[in-house]
Image 1 (cartoon, one colour):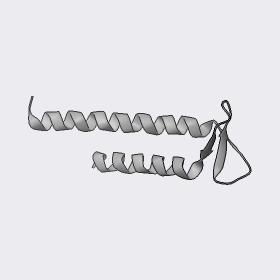
Image 2: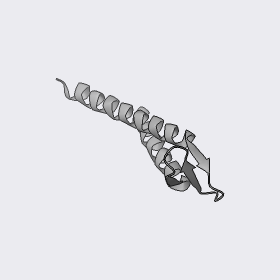
Image 3: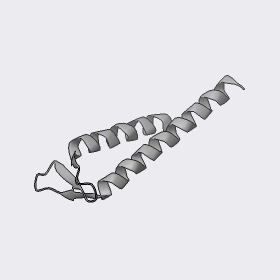
Length: 71
């Protein structure tokens, strides 16, 4: 297997992984309900409270890495 093919395959696998993580975060965020505090939301099914700042930061970090790989 050539070095460039191997690197391309690794990049594609990482991009797929990043896309899956972004989709998981999006799915989670869609199930959150307001708590009355702007930075926190509660999961509709479990009642777990999430800090939206952290969720948004994680999604942004994943999107930045994905964009960097896509260049």
